[in-house]
Image 1 (cartoon, rainbow, N blue to C red):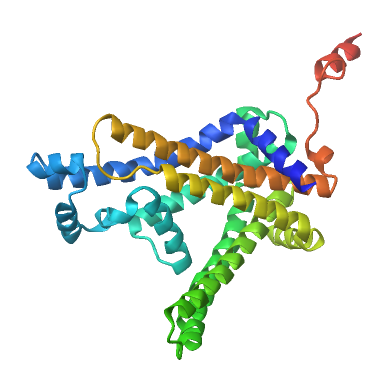
Image 2 (image 1 turned 30 degrees about the vertical axis):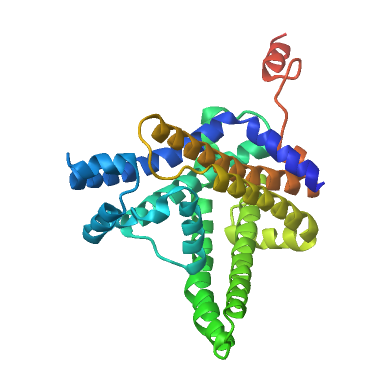
Length: 335
């Protein structure tokens, strides 16, 4: 059932290319103002100097340090860690270390999350019905579930606040210090910290799994209570732990595979002209692949839930076709 749900998830994602395009556009458009602002900062600092030519042709470390020394706000994010695969590692490290983003980045993330909360209902409704819902149907479902998912987002926010403000300091500021107080071998200290990162990450992933199934149960079963949806999600995972965790692990392995490919093909610094645009296209293709995997997580989990609880026919009502369509019924009534 897990493999069939995994394959069914890809079928549902690829059957709705408009959703993929819309999600990509949402991501790109929200990042565009930040990129334009940073471009203005760099342009103002470089001007028409020789440094501008050197920066375009390759990495000028001295100028980079000079820029960072006077930068503020969004400019402080223009660090070497933004290059290629280093940016991905930096993002993962920031999450695991519980680092807070600066105001412009945090504001963009808040808008992005608000956009996801709005469209999530339409996305899940489309994947659950397994047929076209048209634009009005998509946005109607998005509007219906927006305030329900907003309440669910508050619960998710409380969970992540507890994880990063309570659990994270307890693990890494308290327990790690106690465990390594008398450790003299660096490898041992590293292994202990890696184990704590693995435990912390596992808790985050489990929370993400619960909230995913809460959304799915809310849409498929038209639940209005998000507390009830969370409780139902926990029951589903408890009753089908093998299926839920194996599917999540399979999807997670695909994500790790994508990261491995990105580590190989990620563009570095330097170059001008066509090489810059090639690097930009490669980065956008990676972003598109990331979004496809995110949508596949939702689609495959929806397929697994419907197959496990025999809800597929409950939500995925077939398209009315002749002679059972409304038009045929109207003709019969007139005869």
